[in-house]
Structure formats: structure tokens, C-alpha cells
Image (cartoon, rainbow, N blue to C red; front, side, top):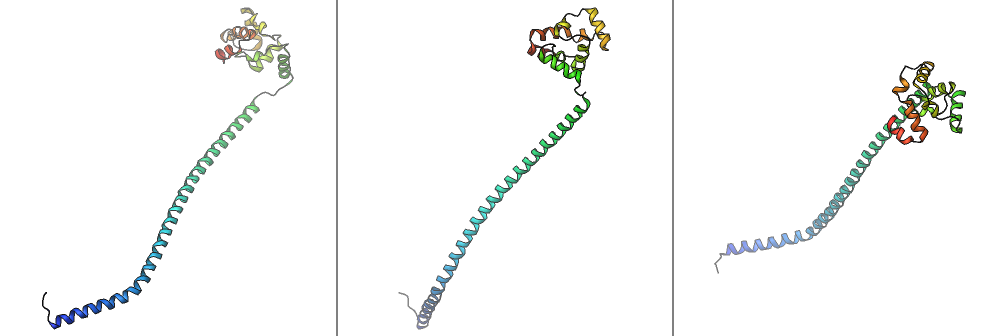
Length: 190
């Protein structure tokens, strides 16, 4: 064992005594600080979890907002298209000739079977059908029975260009419709 002088023994005793007092003072205060640390740590954990929850809610709300904006834009597009379509319908209705006695008579006669719907033939239309009916041509068979001379006379009386009946193949269309080949007619002439 090393040999110590009296001064060294006194210094060792004083250091031990000071360490013991320091331990006593820090022992009681350590519990208080440890409790405060634990309390602060639990508050920090709770705050972090609340931040995570709120961040998730913010992200969810941002997604809902984007979806709502997209739906509102889609709704606005639909409304704009509907408005444009309604304007187009109004424009077409204002330009179209109203239904008068001749038109109503043609439609009623076609529905009753006394007349065929000549407007289905490409190139005739409702106005042409009324003119044909006024000239005594009411059925598909009347058109198929036309000779080239009759075509020329009919074109002159209707005020259409010479050769229109042959160019638009009215006789061929009338024959198809008379035989009931409406799908084939629609495919070839529509």
C-alpha cells in the first residue's frame, strides 16, 4: 500500500465528505427533475402524435379539395355544353319551318299507311316530301315507277337541278325502303 502523508489523508477525507454532501443534495433534487423530464417527454410525444394526426387530416382535406375542384370544373363544363346545346336547339328550332297543315297531313298519312315516309330518302327531306305529295307522289312505288322523262319533268316541277333524282339514286333508295331494307338503306345512304 502506498504511503500517504497526513495532509494527503485529510484531503482524501475532505473529498469523500464533499462527495457525500453533494450526493445528498442532488438525490432529493434529482427526483424532482426526473419527474419534470418525464412529464415534458410525455407532453412532447402527445404533441408529436397530434401533429401527425393533424398532418394526415390536412392531407385528406387537400385531397378532398382537389377532388371537389375537379368535380366543380366538370360540372361547369357540363353546364357550358348543355347551354351551348340548348342554344343550338333554339337556333335550329327558330330556323326550321313550323309544322303546318301540309306537314301534319304528310306525317299523318304516312303513319296511317296511305303514304310512305318519302323524307327518309336521302335528298328529299320534309319540304321535298310535301312538294312530292302535292304533285301526287305519295308512295315509294310511285318513285320507282318514274321513267327518265318523268324524272326530268318532276325535277322541273320541284325546282331542283336536272339529274338530281338520278344522282341521288332516289329510285334505288325507294326500292330498298319499299322492300323493308331500312338498315341497309341507313348504312349506304345516311
